[in-house]
Length: 378
Image (cartoon, rainbow, N blue to C red; front, side, top):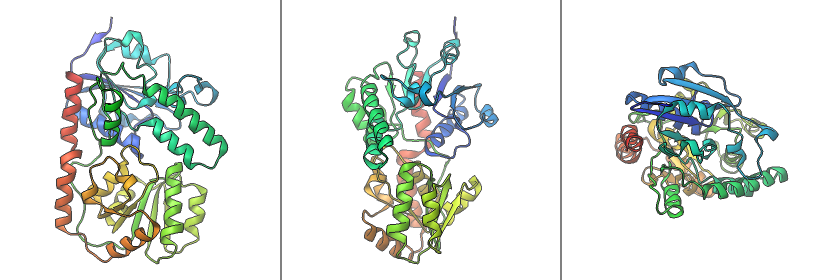
């Protein structure tokens, strides 16, 4: 028989959430940290593909379990999305059954056991990272590779089918306001609770003053970010002499080549966390367009909590509630004009105070973890 544990939770993560160096894992890691600080006992289950086991997680978790993701043909199914079917393991269910505690599924990726009959009496909370069917449809629209387009369209169709079958979850907890509205419409009888992404900041760290460069940062091997980086280099900064720094993980060869063609554009590949924080703090303008209006881009929160001016487009601000504390542009000319203007003005204490008010209203970690614990214990 499973042992019932008070103030405990299972958390299933699509990847090893340490180091917390990209969007989804930033959210998962700081969810874990906040729960641990609130004395919740965490049984963490991570799927591995390309990241090592992380002993650092043991300081926050009662137990940490690792499962190898089944990539390639072993992850394919005609009825379930690859992102989910590739994350299944025969040891996961026994580990969940051994300790009777609620389960947090960190995204559709982790939901292979959502409808498992032996977990029918267990409280289940699904944290929707995106409306994944829309996200993969957008990826399909934007890629020029025929094989990738076929895969993205097939995955979007399977995700559409599965996202209509989430009744086994007791609560849906999307991380963006727009996604919350989507799931409320899709599941009118289901509790859908907006719970913004967790992050490392307990207070605003932005510094008043004036920087000398613009910054774009992110996972530079991801198709969406490759497109944005090339847009900024070729269509916005190529015709200006204002310095641009592009920093992030695993830059694609196209980004490397594009940056090398311009003396005022600097690429920093795979910076350590301390170096990234220095870059974020010192930049004058964080230039953050996106071409996919989905979920919450945690790079936006990083820029707002620790940086100066933020210049984004409507797609980046989609569902965030942060329009009031960001400058906006859409076209290359609009971005260029806004950048030239913002480079002339110091970032002031008044700017910091206004930003703190808006961020604390929605994104304060303490309030969010209290709402999550309420869902666990209801």
